[in-house]
Image (cartoon, rainbow, N blue to C red):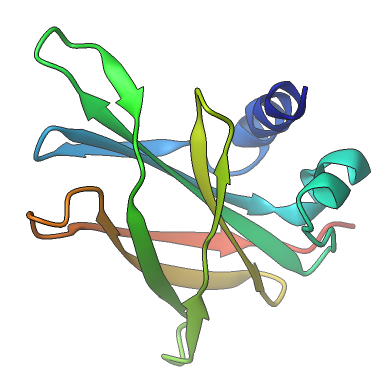
Amino acid sequence: MFKALLLLCVALVAPLSQAEQSLTQNGYEVHYNAFNSGFLTPEVAQANGLTRSKVMALLNVSVLKIGDDGSKKPVNALVSGEAKNLLQQVKTLSFKKIDEGDAIYYLSSFRFSDEELLNFDLEVQPDPNQSPIKVRFSQTFYEDR
């Protein structure tokens, strides 16, 4: 049930914020999106120990292994990163793993100021024998009103 709620929440949020993004590298597909935590339902937030707030956002990362036949399977990964604002102030991101069996997510929450542009630098390492996949993107965040 939680998965359905989270997927519904992400589906509803994506058009309102920046759509989910992805990149493919080394046989893996990395999906990532960031959105205001106020879009979470109270039930989903409570079930996962997440804070809903007009000045808090969530970064969601998931990793899929691409099989030889093109199939995709969720896999574990080491996910780390940081966000920098225009003044180069760094927010270190700490990720919480959510494993639902058929889906694995890594969530990090962080504070932001209204109309703040953040530059994200992430390292995603699904295979310890390979270099991490580097993910870089920028996004502006707005307070819920």
